Picture 1 (tube, rainbow, N blue to C red):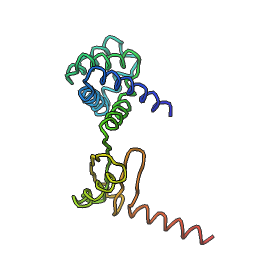
Picture 2 (cartoon, rainbow, N blue to C red):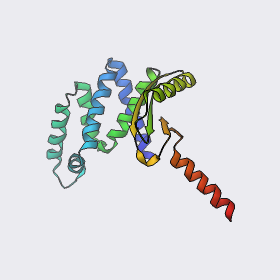
Picture 3 (cartoon, rainbow, N blue to C red):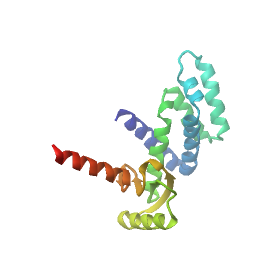
Picture 4 (tube, helix red, strand yellow):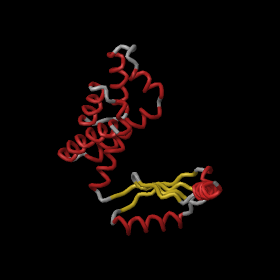
Amino acid sequence: MISGSIARRWARALFAIGEEHGNLLGLLKEVQRAADAWMDSEELRDTMTNPLIDARARLAVWDSLVRRIGASRLGKNFLMLLFDKARLTELAGIARELAVLVDNKDNRLRAEVIGAVPVSEGVVTRLRSALQRSTGKAVMMTTREDPSIIGGVITRVGDLMYDGSIRTRLSRMKEGMLGRSG
């Protein structure tokens, strides 16, 4: 995927700058705040990517956002460079990739547990322990609900997904029955 490799290159460059200047976590937070603003506002995305809007007006809008998030000099320079190079659409991907790099540096792993109903603390604790044992990394877990999975849980760790949902089990059973009936 071309877009992912672009985001990865930008994230690696920012990671190196952050390490060099001893401000890696601060830069990560600034980029994440800018990415959150970008993703939360369709109006911002439309304004910043619309070639019919004067470039100076777009620059003023972006500069205002960068100031509002309280970006450091390094953060501001990076975010303004993204604007100059027309790479704002990569911002969310850069933030994700940078977070992965920082997590790897800190021997940390992020995981998400999705349940049809709120996932109990006991389940979260058992999953966290199992992931920590298997990876040797500290595991930061988040949870969310998705009633469409019917029951069970889905655990996402990076690009891997462990699907223990009832929806998937039912789907597999259906495929098995349909495959044997012909």
